[in-house]
Amino acid sequence: MDYSLIFKFIAALVSLVSFWFAVLNFRFNNRKKLIDEYTVAKAFLEDLDNLKNKFVIEKGYQAVAGSDTFDFDVIKHLLLCPHPSFSKLP
Image (cartoon, rainbow, N blue to C red; front, side, top):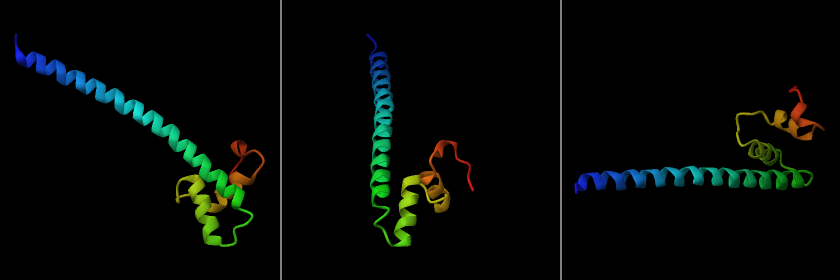
């Protein structure tokens, strides 16, 4: 029996298992990330009335958006309007 064929089969099997592990890991981490983002957004919006510092409020809106590329006024508009999915930006 040729040992190189056995080695190639084992290497292919390990590669396939590693690929599926990476796909499943990405899928479950993505779900966990969404749950974490929801928790941060919910906590920020609940504390929004008590916050006084403008810097903290702006950083909170950026944390909810997940990026600092958006202007916080746009994020605030989308979060506070009654139907944010149908909103037009100012």
